[in-house]
Image 1 (tube, rainbow, N blue to C red):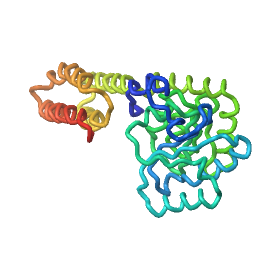
Image 2 (cartoon, rainbow, N blue to C red; image 1 turned 90 degrees about the vertical axis):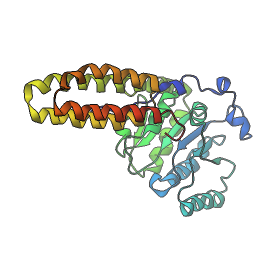
Image 3 (cartoon, rainbow, N blue to C red; image 1 turned 120 degrees about the vertical axis):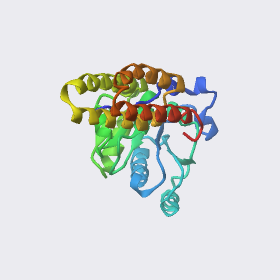
Length: 289
């Protein structure tokens, strides 16, 4: 298993002091107001109403807490239902909808904790982003988060739909600053060791070397696996946050191995994949990618 990688550079120093942006001041909050946030498309599959319900519970014990929902309202009806719920429960001064933002690393850097309430979730790069920003994460056991979060070490995992458990875990973090710092640091370290862009690239390159050495011994079936790997590498690398220079460096290293197949059909297939990879690497540096 090779997990998606995250470029840690954007999260190296995203505190409010270094970023030049004070989110609490921008929202008119006290400088020490506890902040819990999530980054998600505002749609029903993200179960954001559970965060609102847990916020109501948390505020009974920590009345100075505030909650942020960062993301575009893709489902207008669902977004309206959330706003109506907040209004009906008189929580408008504590729950803030920030919409889609381009400065997510800075916003994550100013949270005290990150929450994810989904019933179903893939790998969940946003969890990696929160951990890269050294924030403890509370998430439901909904798939991907269970492979990322170490329960009790980098954050807490709770059962899907359990509002009381969500609220309890977030309250525990907000009431214990040393625990929050310890979890945040452990999360950052875990991302660096297991989920960084460099680790992603190194593991793919190592796999390529392994497949290449086996290909000569195990025949045609193994060679087809190698072709499939290269095609997937092209696709995955295009989605990476690696900068173009690093990506091209990895391509050049792989070319040494591709030359060994230059007299075969396999070489021609691999060569086509290499050209596609170069093209995608250039496109990856543009804003829309």
